[in-house]
Image (cartoon, rainbow, N blue to C red; front, side, top):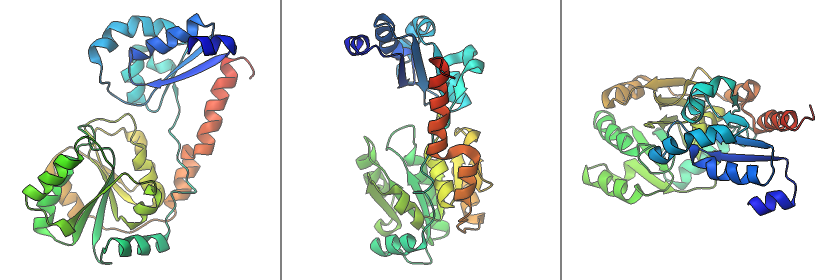
Length: 289
């Protein structure tokens, strides 16, 4: 990387990560003569806590511009310096994440979901952070009270097989829960949902909640998800308590708000607007604004 930056006289480098391990990349860029070095954080915690602590003084001396997707992500990466950090939204394509009733009918038909089923949807990697075990335990409780609900889990990861087996072991019927794996058509699948659930243990942002709101869904999110994700009034934040989630779901009225897509776009979450914001930072840092 150092050789490439030097040979091409690159004026600005933009690095993405969640910890001070970005020091390695930032140092290479500095040694190659790059004067503008952006460190961009996307999460509220990191996996390499000891390395992060040891490298933080070097990291702080090497980045020239700090960027984060939310205030909590900024606090994680930049600490007391977070007030001087740019907050850039992780934009979505609002043209893709727009409710389509034809897609809703087709997806429900494809997976044999009856029209009167209330579909609770989740999208995320199967890992500790995304906390799907909580969803499965909550759903077992919910389904024992009202079998009109169905849980659809989209994603893959290290815990998927374990949680599929766990779901079976605790007696959840196969027809009540779907594990769809990784999908490239999440924007299509979401049309079949009635409510979106995100029980994360921690999040830097939780962009999938923005996508769900753009589709028009109501959302129930862990209170560990940053409140910047509340773009519409159809969002509730709850502590990770099975009973509270169960009764929130049972008491909710579900309807798709097709106007939410426009509201998401008007509040600056469209990817096209976010690209312009980032471009303005680039131009400012290299002195062309």
